Length: 252
Image (tube, rainbow, N blue to C red; front, top):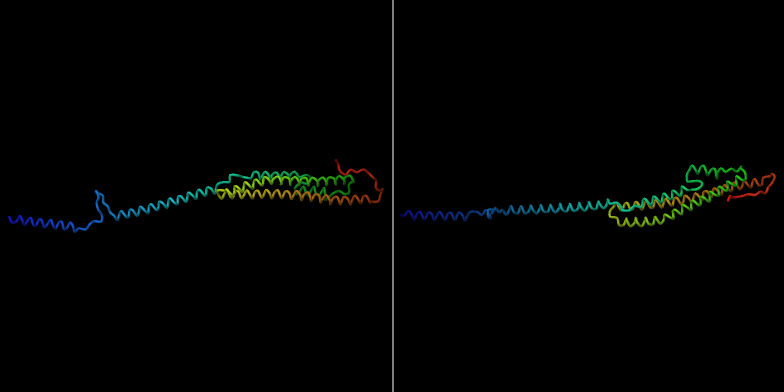
């Protein structure tokens, strides 16, 4: 019977040792909650990775936004000007060309000038009859008058184009100031240059027509002097003398 208390004491000692061993064991770095293992270190690493991933996504979104804005700007830069003054300007230039093409007498052509100027002014026949010389002088006078008339027509055409140029300048300047992109601004600038070219063409035509008229009139005066000397020589030449006769200077 003495062995029973001994066995109880041994059992109690073993139980105490077991409890002590259980208390002194190290605590693990994770715990279980309802069967789910929670690791704080792994959680923090996952959280840091998620934050970095979110930052990369935000950077990509910003890049896409910048690219979209760049495409919008490029689209604006490539947008064409909604107006064009090329056709009216070309029409004005054609009108000036038509006026120059209607030149009477000696036209604006090098070969024509060489042929007709030589015949009518340079190489006039001073050996012909009095009637022939009078008719030649009349033809030259009419040529000078026609040349001045042509010059006046060209000048009138250039003046009539001023209103069209004013309207074009106003429209192009407005379009340039309200341009949404580089292409529109460049096109407006190019059309303004085209307008200046048209105005220079009108100015060139005006100067050329006036110079033509002055040149023909100067040539007429020179031919008239040469013819006058010949007629005076004939009048003063010895012979049967001067016989009065009716003369008609210009035809009606």
